[in-house]
Length: 215
Image 1 (cartoon, one colour):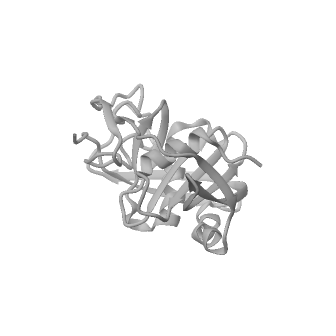
Image 2 (cartoon, helix red, strand yellow):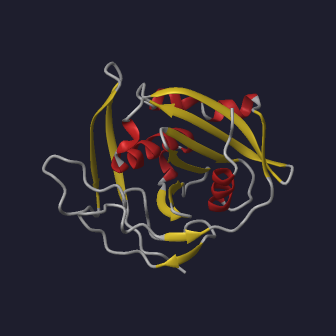
């Protein structure tokens, strides 16, 4: 089943010296009305595009975007379950995958860790967890834009991430050649890189969310 989603590209400018988001603008085929003058347009449809979110089964049709909730148009999915998710020390290759994140972060991440992720004992990729400066994650629009910015650093400009709601959580899924998922967890940004061809990206993201990296 195809889900109606909206395509939009972000352009964000970061002030690295002050460690703050200087400004974000967006351009594309759609936006939301009702935004305050000078504010970035909605990012709910920002990284979304027509298609399905992995193999996740949609549980409801996307709703028209409203000025009250810029995320209202996000499709809702129910990801497939995966096997047992576990973590192991990251290899040099795992760490290298996320090297571009620091440069793309604009100095807004405070710390980070990378681990290898396995499903039922099979190495499927890596997970990176980054802390952000306190208070930066309060804005949903900032969360969506920043997740896309870091995902594009890992997956490349063709990532074209799309946002979905999965188990009550907003998750971005890449649509390019490299499979990357990302989301905010409190003041942390979590990025999942799937190196293997399976499992389904949305399902892997849900498995990592359900079994968070500790330490």
